[in-house]
Amino acid sequence: MKTLLLSLAVLLMPACMSAQDHTDAFTIRIKGMRCEECAHKVKTRLLKEKGVESLSFDLEKRTATISYDQTKISPDSIKSILKGTRYKASPYNENDTILRGMGLQMSDMHCQNCANRIMKRMEGMVGIDSIAAHVDSHYVFFRYDANRTCKAAIREVLGEMGFTPVNYYTSKDISFAYFLIPEDTDVEEAIEMALSLEAVDDANANKQKHSLAITYANKYTTEEKLLEGLRSAGIKATLPAPHTCKE
Image (cartoon, rainbow, N blue to C red; front, side, top):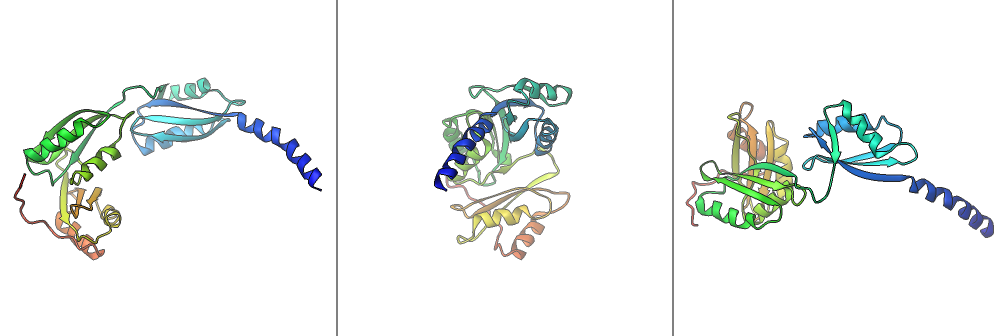
């Protein structure tokens, strides 16, 4: 019996290895792919093709990594499929410079000293191309190389510095709220709860600062309603006292 099973295993092994050897993957940049909806359209279109097995996306880089069966389709054929759409494919290289811009609002960036501290720290971070701070609106614009860093990494460093960054938009329809939360608050739970509130675009919490920041559409909600919603959900948020900067 053992001899029979071993023989079957030996016979099946080349077939399995052969099937695996047919699968390959490559990465391309896709012009115009800016959001999840765009990525979904690209994915839906390419998965219709015989031989395209799976796709994964990096929206910051505007790239798609495509797994395919070499016996059924080629990279050139896959690229040509996108020529007839608004999403044009081009070569990707990990050494490319892919510049992106991001605005972050930090209500706890109170003064020029705060801004200077941010700029000094972030200018030394790999991938940062340029920084512009606007203290009056508590806003910093970052230009960065998406092939060497990312939004999440930038936000993480700012959080470690004691700031609470959230998405910034220039629209008059967007406002920002900033609350204090108890030291024992689960920050991930606070973020999740804030994001579930009506008209909230972004939320972030800082454990060391005991703060919760929110970006929201002011046509549909207010700071007071957000505070009420957080408290109703069990997040004991409060408005901070007027700030006196010690820096």
